[in-house]
Length: 205
Figure 1: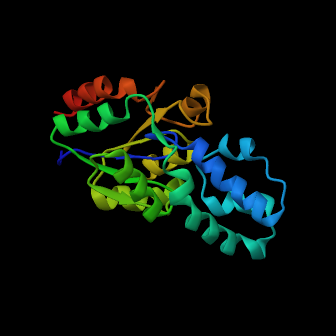
Figure 2: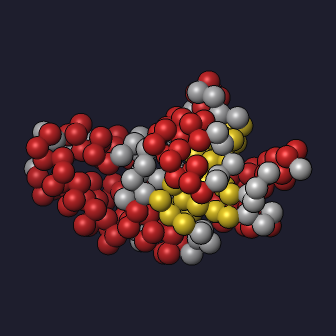
């Protein structure tokens, strides 16, 4: 068994950015005059931004509006973002085992890195722009044996990479649905992760 590498999703796994993300979407609504149900948007975070924009706008507007969103994102979305319970302790648990921590997210890398810096998260690398089983590319490249996320797409990414899938029920998907999708373990939130990691490491030694 190689050195421990644990990957984490970002939105609704490590951080809760719903307030700030909602603010950025409200600006898009105001600028375009389109009635966007912002509460609905922030209730289903996880998939790539372009997928959500395509729900509200014609196909030819997706790329420019995604660019506009990412332009206003740092100022509007980052300040209101908070850490989810147990996030910092989960990262520290990996460190205690001598491991490395990577963030693998569908969010654009630049904006993900802004969050990491703003919140002082001690991660080794941030990989953005990957979704569902596409996350397996980064997980395999980094040699991750564990991937932690809140969405069905995170489970797919872990399984495609041959990593243990740890799901947290802090996002839009219910715990029962995370289990049904094949997560190896489902936690209420990250506060249970350090104890799980202790047991996982003990089992592989």
